[in-house]
Figure (cartoon, rainbow, N blue to C red):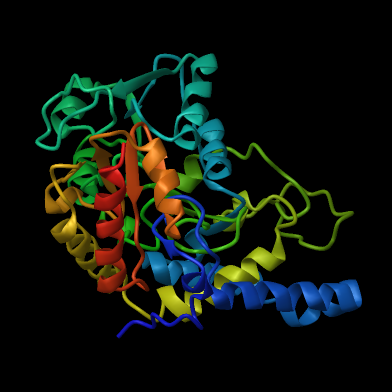
Length: 388
């Protein structure tokens, strides 16, 4: 079913890449599409642009298909943080309003909300829990619980801002449960999808998600410095414009018409020139992978690869952090008995690429790897962990 060839994924020639939660090798069609655009620019500048005028509309349509929404709800951004800042700074907070997030969120989904404290808004942080949902005294990040969220919500809660998948532990929020909870209380649910989109299905309208911000260089295997923002029409109407430029207004190229007539669809947040080579790359990889296969199929393939790895992993040497199926993600966090930093270095000598965060080794395979790759990885984990 899946193309797992070296031709499609040339990084397989040089390494066993298990760090798709970090910065992934760019998918081949994404690279080709970006290079074609750059060659056209080198050859002719503005005269080479006409064949590419449809890049942004195509991007809107393709990302909408990925999220199962309308193209009007999609914006191109440069990264997750930019999307979060546009939303947080434009939200109609009043003094005394509250935002709920998680104590171990990635900075891109923490600082934009913390910045709102200068507007008199209170940021409340969910505590850390064990895989069964009990509040944990363990310092290493794990996840948060709905029980803690229920306790922290008040009549002043306006936003719940959490990651679909936590970048350190791999804990995945149950978005249907979370979205239903927020709907009942008229709370806007804002999701950092950087560690899920490209690996797990994320359909905002199915889960009552108001907004999703994503960076493209992790599970999407796209360009470094590109992002996607989804906003529902109702939520987008609440957001004041805080960044404006030549692309903000509906009069387009009529630059001397300074009428205040901003876009009201997703283009509302595309305030100026975008990196068109990034748009070309993202269109290429969506065609070749993420609209070619189903997200449900990709998720199951990743989980099966993890299961092979777990089957061969020596539990006397490593403790994997395992969650219930509804909270499982593409990141499998492993706590080595003898510490992770040196093990990452040793695994690198075998061509195995993993990353370490907060003592965990994050094992994050993508669908194009094989069961044999996972067995090899586990054997190397075991062999190197035995060394002192």
